[in-house]
Image 1 (cartoon, rainbow, N blue to C red):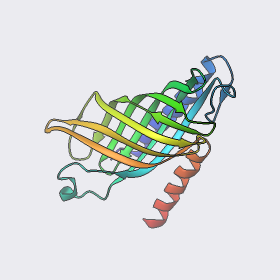
Image 2: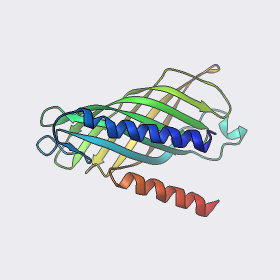
Image 3: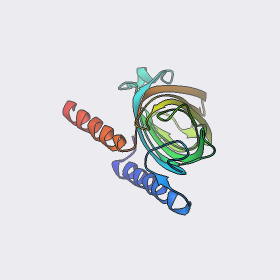
Image 4: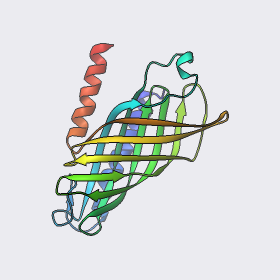
Length: 196
């Protein structure tokens, strides 16, 4: 697994990118997503906790601890018209076999004042696995049904390119946005600390 210092440095870098992008843009910037009219654009700060839908073949035989999947994502989306927003983000993801870093395009279709559909295709650019070496760039994609930029049900897939071939890993989970993201992360850390 990646060292705590490297993981913290990556989280800090993503947070800084997410906080500095809006400053370069004009208009009203919100820290929670809203359709056009309330905000010209908005910052995304999201934490996802879930499970892998499929694990790499042979991983359980090697000693996998389970299908845990977590990710942090930070970036900026700009409303383009009354029903859509477009932007970019940086995603840091980890599971029981390693971590991955991706740049993703973010598209949001507003379904109403609170509900939206998010799509996030992107490119994995860095990462490592415990038992094999990954090759980059690789693809990633995700979709989520979002309520109030607070909670979303998310599914996604990552392409893991290795010397042994290509494996696709899927994941699903709950994504927490805006001020719930740090609270959800701290809750997961507290739960992990209480169980180990």
